[in-house]
Image (cartoon, rainbow, N blue to C red; front, side, top):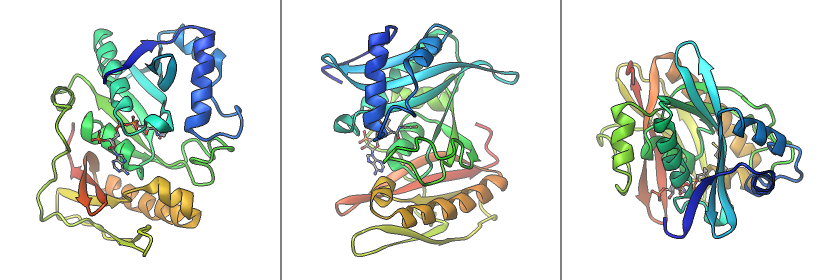
Length: 284
Ligand SMILES: CC(C)(COP(=O)(O)OP(=O)(O)OC[C@H]1O[C@@H](n2cnc3c(N)ncnc32)[C@H](O)[C@@H]1OP(=O)(O)O)[C@@H](O)C(=O)NCCC(=O)NCCS
């Protein structure tokens, strides 16, 4: 993106900017739930990466990447606190940070990157799954508790998250990272009706009415809100209703062996409809 550049942050003064940005992005009332400067320094000095995206001297996007290890995967990366200033959201900054991370992770020989994201947020699903080829095999309930008690972006709703896996040495990801200019993810076959029923009121606030468990197919489609953040900002009870019903649905499908392999949006009048594609028994 023109006018923007990404660099690694190392200095305490840069970390203070990172903290200010966290406070703005997560609409925090105070600094209590920001990752503090000493933690950013510790991660930076112990094999992690603190990435900042700048427009001139303004920090507009950030991410903390933690070095991680498991017996199965060996050395891998866990990404946390990817945030983009509200004035800059949905303009490709998040994608630029992911591209930078991809290049650096490949140079380090990292094969897998993980992070968590709210399954009901379309922009996050669009970036994480459709654009850069992440998959989700696990649904985790209330991972962070009531994270960020003072956050007007997420507080008061259980922090359920997909555990995203970005398998950066696999073709699925390599192909998508080569093809990032494609306009939208590809819609699967037309005959895949969503397994959940979603209605909308006169203000276009969507509600999940019900879902069915389909176990005679290997591919199913699930609808999520076109704008869950708007539902959260407008009607907390409805946001909670989505959380609880979709939690049951996703957990049942994961239990049946389905995983999230794609996401796509379909334009509809002034908005769009958002869908996940789930596949059964696919070891990606
Ligand atoms: C999530 C976040 C980091 C993404 O960064 P970003 O710079 O906004 O993302 P990008 O612009 O690169 O990609 C978002 C995509 O979703 C699309 N999008 C926007 N609103 C959408 C919606 N309601 N439903 C589906 N897709 C949507 C955007 O149009 C864009 O796709 P496009 O480039 O094809 O048009 C950023 O929005 C953010 O900071 N959100 C608040 C904090 C947060 O949720 N952090 C992530 C924690 S895991």
